[in-house]
View 1 (cartoon, rainbow, N blue to C red):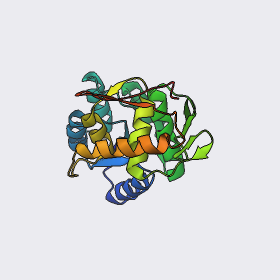
View 2: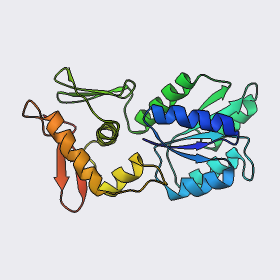
View 3: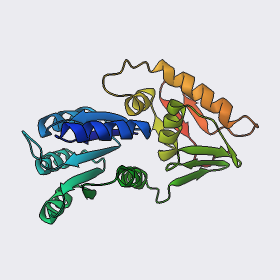
Length: 225
């Protein structure tokens, strides 16, 4: 999942970026509202973390502008303790949840995870498709009760596909959601990840949830098996 992290305090931004990457997120960072608007318009995010007290363009204006321009990814607002008016204004501008500083990173990650899966239409952290079970909180995948060993990128590809069941997902879309903006992207690598996932998911035979649509991309069947 790709996250836009908007925070002007350098130390906090870098600390959060490290924690988010360890948790499996692809992270783009913005130190001010102007950069946040550029990135929010340019890249397809699954979720954003938005501080409100930003230089150049304040966080409220960033949220309002993105929403007016039909960017619908969920936004988690960061506010200072006691500034309840800011929280209300942020939510009214189009924010989806808020977290008061100081906070525990574990709570931020839990809230992000909930926002991502709810925006995809899932209320539970566990997604089931036939014999396949994906736990978005623990980032574990089981097939018929047996846990699979997946690399970080294999998991990211599978998680994205399972959060968008029965949708046609292009290689470009997958590439944009699992790589950061300054990475050297090769969409052909996606084919490698898909091939490895198919072998691991179907090790026992009979589980073929990922369909290739020539020239269009891939589709994950919600009724896998």
